[in-house]
Length: 242
Image 1 (cartoon, rainbow, N blue to C red):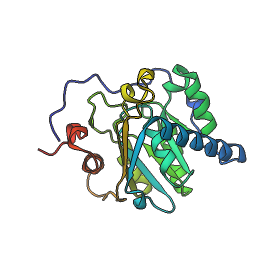
Image 2: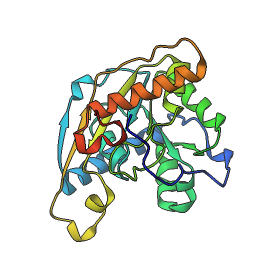
Image 3: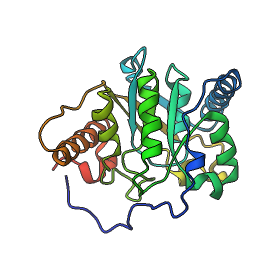
Image 4: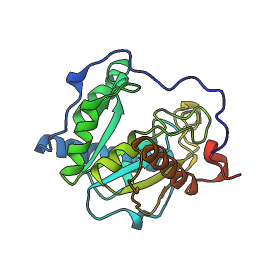
């Protein structure tokens, strides 16, 4: 890994709201909501971007599985959910968005997001994610812990490695490019349909063993390297091969 650039600290959820965090129930209402939101995402992605998808055949036919993704902007998860062939994906999302952006909170609750308090030892959110994996679902997590401030991969956090090792679940690496907010969210550029790509890598597992902290460190390094290997050099950030 390249030297850590000078970046602000990773986000910390100052407001702790454990009542927000729960395992989504797959009610008829939620299944219909997910179907509708995915259809809407497909329409918006088709109308707003020129999307190229690679490696979709690598996505497993059934869970459990931990989806790990790089995080460039708000559109990342919409692109991914619009293309993968399952609605059984529980998203770990930042809890502050629930109140800071009320419309995100409404849509997140409708979809069934597992709200995670970033920067805290959020055992409740981790327990929900582990329960989802035990039920054979997919869980998505961005190991960087925030939208990249580098334009490429930042240092990964240990949450994804912890879940994968604890649940003994396969990881599915998925990367996106071109989803930076200035390119996707700038209304002045609407109509230009910027190029966006999504790449699904082959599932892999982490090998446990030895000291717990060392296992997490190695696991996180492996996860970030797998993501970097799916990205062009300009998006590999701190994990760019020297």
